[in-house]
Image: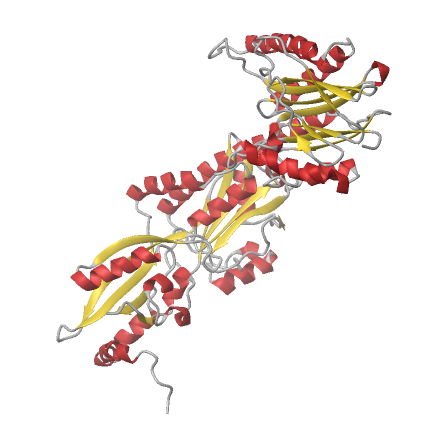
Length: 589
């Protein structure tokens, strides 16, 4: 005896399908089973009772995972709403056609794409209700009137960051499976590094730049068609469609890719094997260039989609690649500026800081995440007469080379003013005047200034003057967070000090206040990047560093304590630069 049917109440549906197949000599059953359309049958209780092989290709859900389950558990994407649609069709008998839904990228590792479903109520010859048939196919958007909608949608999904690799992957993810079955995006190494690419590969160059696979997507999980994983160097044959496109700067359309008559494939057996293995039958290769420079090549392939690429497809692909190219070029220019700003900033920050015989000092600087660029944070320890030490931390508002250059000027000005034996309040007042002149000079270089009363550049700063004999710190703030004082027994306080306005406003003089720093005590100066987070209140950040600093007795190494405090950040890639300067007075508390 065979195993009992786990769903005996569905026998009528099975019988109806079987009778339909037999009545047409098995032709209908064969058609349903082998159709390129994905087909699923849902019974009157909304359970899946039959599914063909093609259905799995659209959402990577196997027959075993689908049969006997409700739509919310057996469909990918917006399954709850699809179940409501099936339920409505079953109740009203009104068919639903062209219902679009997206298959998420997380399903089976395939790229997100749009599919279209049609839902039809099924009844037998006696008009007995049997269930609902669902027919699924890749949404076809090849008509010219739909091109604008596709390009518009791409604007919200391609170029969402200033990362060239991520942007390339977004293009690949966007076009699979609705446009192509397999896509690769290869970029020159110069683009990845933020350098200046070539205009194109001329015939006399005699060299081929290094290309890396920056993006790939496929209807098959893991993109097995690709010879190289993302990030790997790609081999570009000298005689191939890819080199032809790179050299000419023009697209190449091969509606029918014939592996037997493509001479270049005889010198590239690995690619030829992949073409045969996956049935690649149509090829579209486009150069990626923007503002006159060549950045890479995008390759579109069709395998299971039987339609060949045509001129309309090429026009759509060109528009998508052109938009991607602009995003890639912006990201490349940004990467170049960020590298220059980091180099400048690192050259201006002190390589070593010394506390002499008065203080043990340590500092850490963590640049902002690449998406937000480097800022204008700086720190310094300045030795003065009488064994005194000046501790400085500052933050130029803004990012990029301009912020780094301004930081260098401020650091130089503070070092000059520190030697004039002024109180911290007096020093910041003089620095404010100097900075105001700097801002005015910078403003003169711009044709338009929106509001002359508002400086185009501003900065915050904390200046603390340590007196070793009295073990005190005289502190002045220019719009900067108050330092933390770690007492020898581990308690951490944030003394209330006159905050002052940011530098560059030229307003009231700055005031100094004195705080004690007993033997073994620590003063912590930091920028707002350490305590501020867009998702949290600043009090959360202050409490976070208070807890980490309170462990100072268990962490005698000041550099290790610096690392531990930085390690409490909610993200390893902060949105703003983070600077921390710790100074511990010698002696036992």
